[in-house]
Image (cartoon, rainbow, N blue to C red; front, side):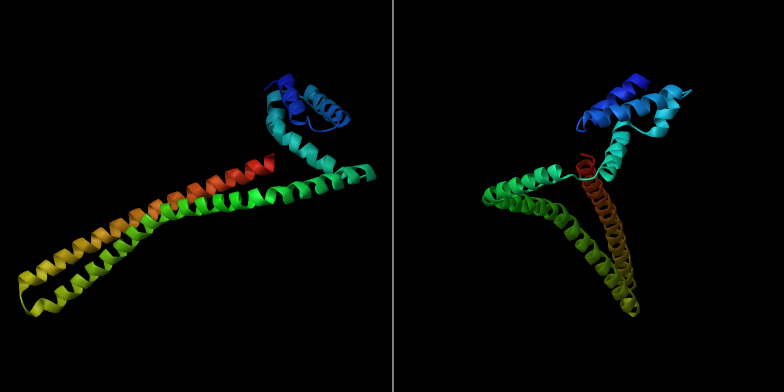
Length: 192
């Protein structure tokens, strides 16, 4: 990215700040990039314009003292927010509850089939082990019956283990997707 494009994107990202702060930041980074031998390597070390803008805004928030006028404006914003919140509550609370219920229902709808198939696989494993035990208990009677119980038990046990492994892999995959989605939503909210 060349110097002009970098500074243009940085200016765009700083658009909510006072003009003097934007100009100071642009002057600083313009001088920094002008002195650089390789602008591309310097911009990659600095980070994206959005990252630099976030750092600048954080530094300005830490440095600037809060004056009385901004406190008054802030108090009015809080008061208006509370008033709007009170009037929006009869609509917002049921909508929020409905959204939460729908999300929970979707998660249940996703996990219940997997859990039930997982329980069935555990049942297959238990049945396979039981069949093997019965096969060993019948060893004194008929060899054909023993082989039938042992073979059937091993097949059922194997099917249960394979099915359980598939369910575990699917659950891990789904949990990983949900975690990535939640992290993405949280990061997107924090960046704005």
